[in-house]
Length: 196
Image 1 (spheres, rainbow, N blue to C red):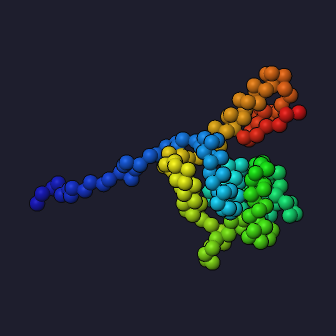
Image 2: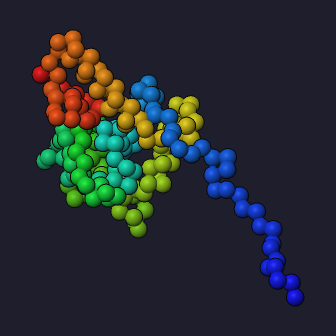
Image 3: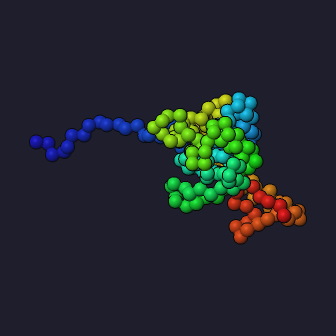
């Protein structure tokens, strides 16, 4: 008998062969505005609210799609800030909600006749309480394609770029003598800053 085991020739294709991996390019502000304008013109209220809240909150998709109306509202109005507990880390994250995002969310809540205990983005499929992350990814892909961009070129890094830009601008204003609100972490930990 032969002591060496027989080896079958088995070639496995790497899972990432031909795929873009790693960091993706951040969205440019003009691209975000193009998506917003397109969604507004086409009266796609739910998608506009989803896009705006996604940009403002910088939440992971699983946290964004599972938001409830009560997470972002006070009474009948969308709040300026919200705190959501992340599923992955279990830590709370606070974010500001800009005026365009508040308007879009309020319009969506009114149009869909959502109550406080409802999911903000309910699923149309009865077996699922809210849209899934795959559906959100498909929507994002459509938004990017609609404005002529290749969806494979973009990732989650837009938020970090916007925070960096806000910090740089706040620092430049402060250097010019404009009083900018600050904390022990600097002028901002968000994409926004406040002037005193």
